[in-house]
Length: 294
Image (cartoon, rainbow, N blue to C red; front, side):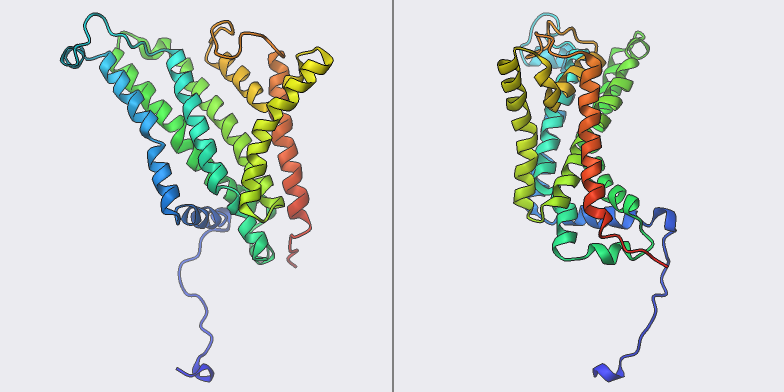
């Protein structure tokens, strides 16, 4: 059909409520992540630790299967707070690597293609824009951390019985609080790196540097000043310290945490400072690009 014969036709389909319109960004964010077959394969492989933990709990309560595997005597597996802390520790690193790989493209692609003014020109505010992108990371990390963690908890409660659920119900709150704290840190750091660096590889490198240079910087301060307060700049140490407290694991038995470096309140301040600094960087980067609607 010739161009001059075409006429404008307005959109006549269903419209999304303005309250939930930012979820369009989340939906397209997911489609961009899973365009890569390699990332999709890595995401599927991230469930391997969950399957191993699932099988461990099952073996711990099935003497017949243990006998078939020639595992004599009482069960060598003990499912307790140490078990869930170790599982979430593995899954948090798996989720971090996945987000470091693909997460920085969430905002960087919009900035590189000058799409941000067009998005903010719609009935979507800066807060909704950040929330829509953040939900992509939050959902991905949730699927890898607290969701399988709760599945394992209820599996253990169902197989163990004898009031195990009520005596260990506090673990549900620990799992949720620990995982959502990790989601907030990883999500905000990823979005701020994505907003300031248009090149995805550079943003991924900055994320890795942030989480790995921090421990080195803190250790250097401790060595030079003869103090332990350098751990405040090591957000990973702060996360470990908080998680150990949430799961009621004594510091003397926690791997790598035998020496009390900073008080618990300082660890929470380190986490809050990391999230706050990321929000400030996001606000500064996106503020000048907002389109004011009349």
